[in-house]
Amino acid sequence: MDKGSIRKHIKHLKSLLSETEKHEFSKAVFFKIEQLPIFKTAQRVLLYNSLPDELPTKDVIERWGLSKQIFLPRVNGLELEILPYINGQLSVGAYNIEEPTGNDIYDINAIDTIIVPAVAFDPSGNRVGRGKGYYDKLLAQTDALKIGVVYDFQIVDTINSEPHDIKMDIIVSPQQTIIINTKLQSI
Image 1 (cartoon, helix red, strand yellow):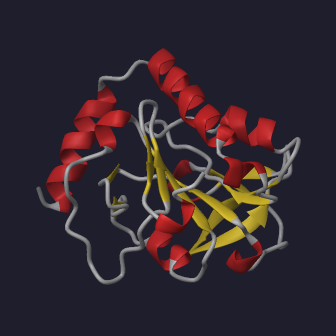
Image 2 (tube, one colour):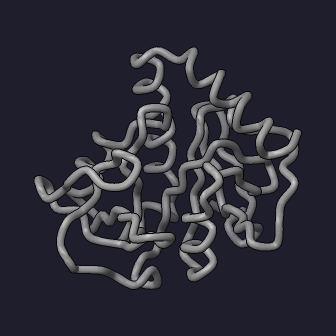
């Protein structure tokens, strides 16, 4: 399937999920991440503020913020800026996503772990995003640990990658944890 077909197919499957299912699957995914030894040592984590069809992140942003420094992206033109999450200091930005306010922009290299949403992943770590390239541009600038998070049906057999596509190190769904980066095989 080409990326456009994958986006259409996954959009349909997401539309079948209830709010309860979304939250239960989100709990399962983020609990699995919390159990990873490499995540336990993470200090600065870039999360995403979820859109209605993505794994919900509101609860995990709050919970992880108790023990880690949490950052969220903010759209600025064709780029993502990285700002610290401060409760109550969000405003609706691009694509109706709540984004951090202020001017305390961090370099992506200050982040050690990035939780990456997607339309789909394949078991090799390839990703289909929403098509704007925001995450590809951002991920190309860093060696941070990249953890892709999805519902199980968002893991597809194969994605034709392009030169600008950045692979994940780990993919986590409610039923699977796929370690792609061979340096992480012992976790």
